[in-house]
Image (cartoon, rainbow, N blue to C red):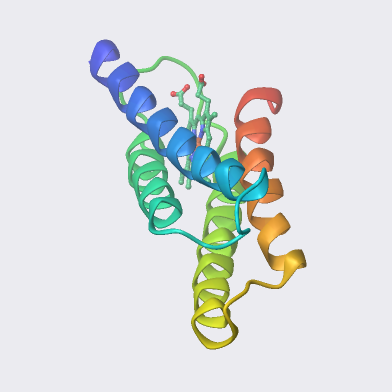
Length: 117
Ligand code: HEM
């Protein structure tokens, strides 16, 4: 059970890497646009995160407040990706505040996972 949980954590991290990596590519020298890879990363991290939110394969308590905050942030990132993609379709570009918020919130979710004990 424990090894299975670690595999799901690994999948969760792959989702994070895909989302954040795709965003960094756009942020550093890219067109600062929303790409399909970002949606995939969010979906993978979100699905694996929900599986990890259930208490299996670990001893001790799960911090549900922390998980709740991460879930809210995930939903906000999803909304920003949706709104950004819509704006991009209409005007060809994503408002900078919206684009940067996606990266900052993604990093915030990783920081919450690691620093909030
Ligand atoms: C953009 C969204 C997200 C990002 C970037 C993210 C990132 C991370 C990272 C970097 C870790 C650290 C793994 C480790 O302990 O080494 C982690 C762990 C975890 N995440 Fe997320 N996460 C996201 C969304 C979610 C969501 C939506 C949930 C639940 C609803 C969730 C639940 C968890 C749980 C339970 C762990 C701890 C795994 C464990 O140690 O058993 N995450 N996340």
